[in-house]
Length: 237
Image (cartoon, one colour):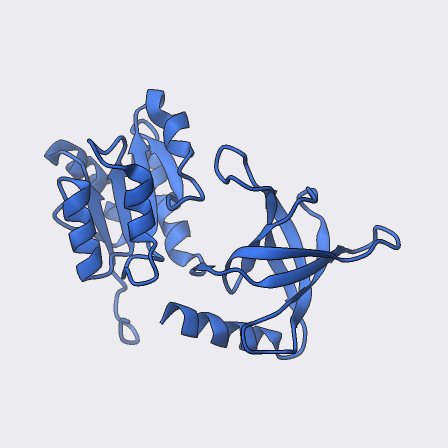
């Protein structure tokens, strides 16, 4: 961490980009206080670098040569990898965009085309850098919509959890904007974390191979926020 008053520099690893493309990324990120490091020529070198130290973001040219992309992303998101919570953006041509988007929710955070990258890449990465780290964990949750009559609670499980929200594996397709009351059981605790959450998106069949919703916490009861923060801190340590 930077000391008080110091400038916080983000480190970005280019993967599978030729020198010209790397310079385009470096120029695009000039306003972001980001250091674009020497790039990894292929996925094998990228995994070696990502295993040796943490980068705040990886900008990956897609398709990535002969890389098994699903396996490459899965290795980056392993609990033991220093880059497990890093921002990963795929940059591609228009013709590969739909194919690249199948990896959203499966390791990749965003997909941009080369035409979009000069304007959108700085904002996309800045938003991802500021986002709360997500922990891949399955926890038992019960949810119930507010103000929808006398309906019972529904049992489901988390896919990932952060200090700002969670992704739930849930058959009920609650509309974005729906407010839910929830109870979530943390490992080793008999007292659930309780609060309210607002549905912000439904899962996409193209991105995630399960029905579910993403929710943002709208209020946590009692000392629930401190307990959740302690759990997440231990989980990402």
